[in-house]
Amino acid sequence: MDIILMICTIVAVVLFVAVLVIYLTGIINLLNHIGGVGDSYLAKLRLGLRAIETETGHLPTEVSKLNKALSETSSGLVEVNKNLEGTIKAVVKQKI
Image (tube, rainbow, N blue to C red; front, side, top):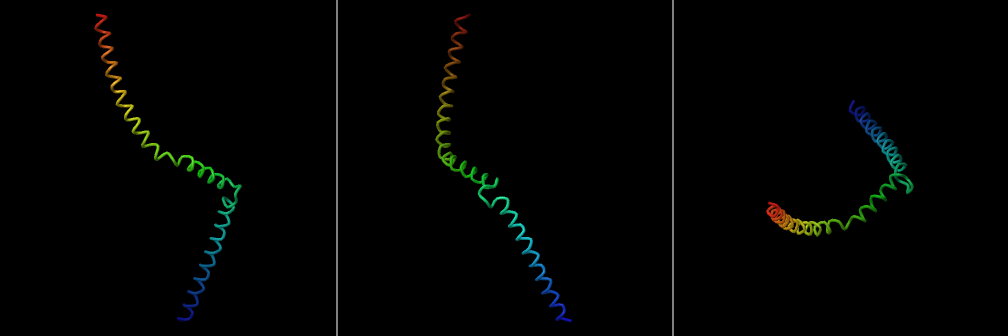
């Protein structure tokens, strides 16, 4: 009885592995068909994304510089706003 159960277990494991290999081979073939060759849409998309990554790779360093410049511009605009408020008040006083 033990030998029959052992043989059934071995046959089940071999069948499981065989089915697994067959399905994995099918999946690999499908994935190679979709994006494995250089002229597929997936390969073109991958090249395009790589080009975008290369072109925008310098942005992280430049953004910090831009943030600093925009902060300085913001403080300058606050001063301009104060000057304009003073000018508007002076003009309103002259009208009266």
